[in-house]
Image 1 (cartoon, helix red, strand yellow):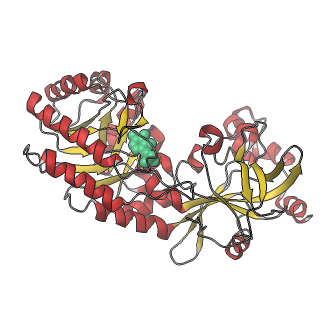
Image 2 (tube, rainbow, N blue to C red; image 1 turned 90 degrees about the vertical axis):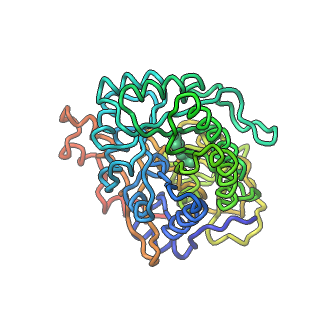
Image 3 (cartoon, rainbow, N blue to C red; image 1 turned 120 degrees about the vertical axis):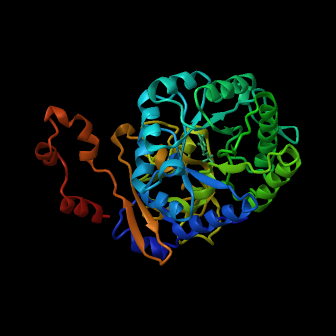
Length: 439
Ligand SMILES: *Cc1c(COP(=O)(O)O)cnc(C)c1O
């Protein structure tokens, strides 16, 4: 299947007049449509709720859209909790699924009234000592071993740092009840970026069965089951996208087979998807600023791995479209690189693309989740702007690009890089524009 960007060259040429490359662009329409499909797919479950994984796209404008669609927010740190609160998510709109949790994070989660999802049995007493045990509490399960679908290993929970063992769940539920918990949930995240409609149904089967056993062992009936994230997207053009309706139906079937006969037919299903919701509806727009021919042909971009880390970190594939050359034959092989002093700073290796020139704009696809948010400042590279393509066709700046003064801000306390002094070394807007216009 061909991957088409959601913007054209003409539109990008218009956008760059206001927002210089590189920048992230998000498609509001795609995000809202996906949110609605997800709700529809799980509409059979009256208590269903999606808590969007904030870490995937931690931007208040995106979170606001998802709040309007009825989603909650899944946070994993102090700052994400503050962000969710600022956007208007209240109390049980917030899921707090953290690990190796600092004391102050638990204290804030309690103050906000978030639903706390504990990662470890030792966190029960830790939380109790800091802020007491809330009435509603959730435990994260790790069944160990390998997680397989159709005999194929999807991931190895036995090697993952997350979650309670099976025995610890039983002990943990009992201890939590002693300490005053009244409503219980069960959570697990066993495989990431699954492009396989069977993932959630298989995971649901495991969690539902475990819930039934826990109810028998402890007399505690779990009230919600959180399938977490992990529903993937087709990064490669030849991959078949997940069908969220089939996934919802698969979970429904497991629900009818396991929970309903056990008298647990009123359990609410929660999810914490990130990638599936925003991944395809965000891209990184960048400009080719150099071409280099040595032992390979290189296209050098004004974006680098500090803007999008997935290729460098996981060798992840991100499709690339050269704008305006969508229909040209892909008969040239390039490494597409950024400018970090790290040879893994390559968005693509040996990628067949149309013949490309300096000045061409490229779209790096499927960067809407775990893209901007994994950015960093290595080599003094600055984070880019984020722009939202609204449903009415207008563009809105939803995060400005960092400036050198942002980079200096954390050592400003010495006075060495005060606004005054810092400015002396920074080119003025006019000087920058003059440099940019000399082609
Ligand atoms: C990362 C994460 C998610 C979201 O994962 P996606 O792959 O983006 O769907 C959800 N829950 C937890 C606990 C996570 O760590």
